[in-house]
Structures are given as C-alpha cells and as structure tokens.
Image (cartoon, rainbow over all chains, first blue to last red; front, side, top):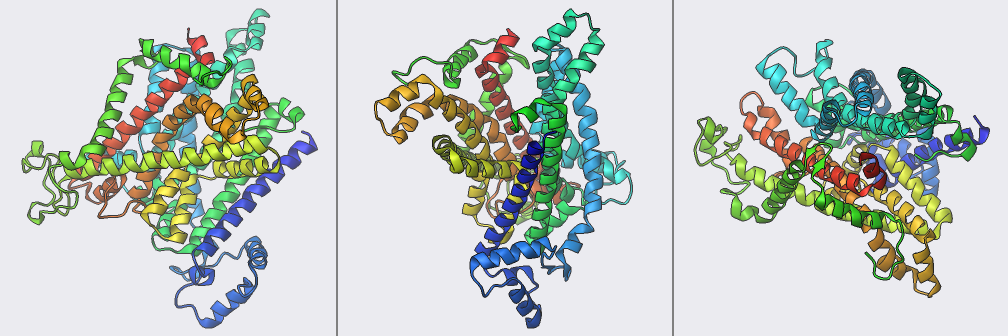
Length: 311
Length: 306
C-alpha cells in the first residue's frame, strides 16, 4: 500500500473530524451564549467565569475557535445539566449498551443479507431471486419504529414471550437487534446481488470458465472476492445507518444506549451531551471510513495505482 | 430533449428511450407491471388526499369529543361515525390520518425541492469552476455522506430549537449531497461532450448553457434520483416526528401519530398502526417506482435482462 494512498486517507479522516468540530462550533455560536448552553442554569458564577475564560469568550471569533478546538482535543466537552457531571462521562457509560445492540444488529444484517444476496444473483430471475428482492424492498420501506411496534404488539402484547422494554437479559436484545438489523439486511442483500451480477458478467469470469475451473471455484475464488469490494464499502456506510437507526430503535425498546440518551438530551436541550454525541459519532464514522478505505485498497490493488478511491 | 442538441449517449438520451420502454413494458423482474400500476395508483391517491383533505375528512384534526375517547374502529364495535376509532383525546383517527398524510407528503415534497435545488447548484458550481471550489464542495459532500444525517438534524434541532421552517429546511438538506455528486458528474461529462463545447464556442454565457442545455439533458436522471430519495425524506420526517422532535402538536404527521399511539399499544393499537401502514405503503410504492424508473433508464442493466 503506497504511502501516498495512506496519507490521503488519513487526511480525509482528519478533514471529516475537523468539519464536524467546525459544524458544532458554528451551530453552537448561532444558538447564543455557549457557556449558558453548555453549563447548568444554576452553575455558580465562578464556574461560569472559569469556562468563559477557558473558552476565551471575551476574545475574537477566530481566537474562540482555536480555543474551542483545543478544549475538544483535550476531551473537555462541557457538563450535562441533567446529571451535573462531565458530558463525556454521561455518554461513555451508555456506549457498551449501544455497542452490544449494534453488533447484534450487524450480525442479523450479515447473516440474512449476504447469503440471500449471493443466492439471488446465482439464481437470477427465479422465484428465489424475486422473493429476495421483494424482501429487500419491504425491509427498506418498513420504518424501523413501525417494525419495532409491530414486534412489540406480536411478541410482547399478543404472544407474551418477549419483554418489550429494557436490557436486563439476552431476551431483551432479540427484538431491538431484529428491528435494527432487518432493514439493513435488505440493503446488503440487494447490493451483494448487484455486485455479484456485475462480476459474473466480467471477461475474467469467462476466462475462468474457459480454463476449466469448477463452478464452486469460479464463484468462491473469482467472483466473491471481486464482488466483496463494493459490498465492504457499503457495509461501512451501513454502520452510519446503524448509528442513525439506533437513535430511533433504542427509544422504542427503552434500550439504555447512546441513541436513547441523545433523544432525551435533544428534547431537554442538554447541549453538552448532544455535542459530545455528535463529535463521538463523527469520530466513529471517520475511523470506519478510514478502515473501509484501507480494506478497499488492500482488496483492490488497482486503487493504489490510481492514488485514490472514489466512494 | 434539447432542440438542436447533437445526438449523444448521455443519460437523458437513454432516459428518453427508457420511458418509452417503460410504457411498452409488460413485465418487471418483481412480477407483472400491475405492481407498478398499483404503486402509481397509491402515490396518486396520497397526492389527491393531500390536496383534498379538508373536503374528505369528516372531522377536523384537532376536533375533540371527550366523551368518546379511545373508541375502537367502527368495524370492531366502536361508534359508527368514527371509521378508525378515536384517540386518547376523543379525536377521529381517520380524519387525523388524512391530515397527517398531507403534512408528511408536503414536507417530503418541499424537502425534495430544497434538496435538488441546493444539490444541483452546488454540483454545477463544482463542475464549472473545478479547483478549490470543487474540492470544498466535494469535502462537504463527503462529510454529509459520512455522517448519519439524523444525528446532524437532531443536533441542529437541539441547538437552535424546533421551528417548522427549520424542520423543513433540515428535511430538505437530507440528500442534497446525492444530487450534488450526481449533477457534478453529469455536468462534467456534458461539458466534455461535443454539444456543450459547440455552444460554448458560440460565446453563450455559461449560466445560459447550464440552464438551457445541460440541466434539461440531465433532468431525466435527476428525476429518477428524486424518486429514489423521496422515501428517505418520508422516513426522516416520520422518524423525527415519531420521537417527538419533528412536527409538533397540535399539527399532526404520520410519524407523530405513531409516536402518540405508542403509549396506547396495549389498549388502543388503532391510534398508531394505520399511520405506520400508510408510511410503509407509501415508501414502498415510491421505492418500487424509483427502482422501476432506474432499471429502465439504465441501458447496461436492460441489456443484461434482455
């Protein structure tokens, strides 16, 4: 992997982070006095003055901006007025629950999406293909919050087999993970299918056939690795969708994660918590896109020669 | 398409034949064309309801009759003047659903206009000026594409407070990056093609070239993209309203109704479920239509199918 390729990707990740911090800075200034917004209303005057001095609010905007960048880099993101604790602590203790839900949902997505996508491409035009495609479109169109409510109605209210809210046991994880994972499963199945179709039509597949490779070898050895390249990129983008989806799904099931925290914080305008979550999501997305770019470059050596991958 | 344009293999050129093929097509890979007609009928019905709701709804959306609270739908033994029952304040669910359709569809339509306008302008600016302007616009596109938009929207709503205008703008900003990227690519290839160069040598102003020649040529592809994006706008609006952070009472939206109904799942499921079904049917119909358009405008896909 060329150094130039790597440097470009690192730069891109840093650019995303910088834009996110700048975005929060701008919106925060648009909302009025940031100290009042990021500290509790009843904060003592000495604390307010201390923050005012630390963020340099008596100085010019560019200076304030630099100070803000510095305090974000130092992990100082204000105090949650609901909890009277540093916002970063409030957010961090919700992360494990969201990760648990996220990984479970990703597992649901891949276990449904990949096999159906590959099979649909191989059996193009058959009932299996059409059924899979119908399912993917249904999955994409069904809003996650509605699916969640339908699951609660069926399994909690009618059959009474699963708990509708909370996170105490593994049983609590089933419905949120299904809700969050199913929509993305459709997208992955669909993308895997079209990516496979694209690859199956390429000249090298004909070459492989001409040289007498078995069908299994053609698919596992030639088609899948090439079809995987765009799928991995899309999978990276799906992580963003998972995070966005968690914001909606967690409140439906009372799941005590970051998404639930964010919705509560927005409703009560606990801005220190909101800004912490936004920056944390930006950081996560930058890291994931970076990882996707690296994997992409590793799977598709041609990207290195071009010096850039377009996503 | 554009009169006097030199025939070329642009997306719009393909789309002209694509729509012809669509009209003449008898089957899609998802079954018969009747599915597409059904989707079209549903979408038209939603648009008609949005236009005609004051004449269609038997009650006002805020009209309460506190003596008739939480009554089940008429067919399940409820009061027969309330087709889908009543909610916790004794409001007619059927009328509220109709008004909610109007709110949700209008927001998504206006959002589409905002998004395409911003995206098209920025995409053309990027393609025209190249250099640092293009870099800047594409960096913004990358940023927006890399962040889950609902997080950005929630942050703005938290910082600036919820107002209907701001909410509209936010829904509109969802997806501008798709249009910007698409338009930039199409404008670049249009610029590289003979006809744009030919007009340019005539000394016509760039704005006129883009407005009169390039945009009409890419409009077909852009229209398909708006159809594909439309369900996402509906989902964004209904999600935020469902969480209580979008459309605010006493106004109503499909998402808001489902959110309100969530508290009455055990006793009065009919408050929320109809709205959920309508969101589902609408996003499904528009998605299928969008896919159909795209598949039949995409030459390579069609060739493979044939």
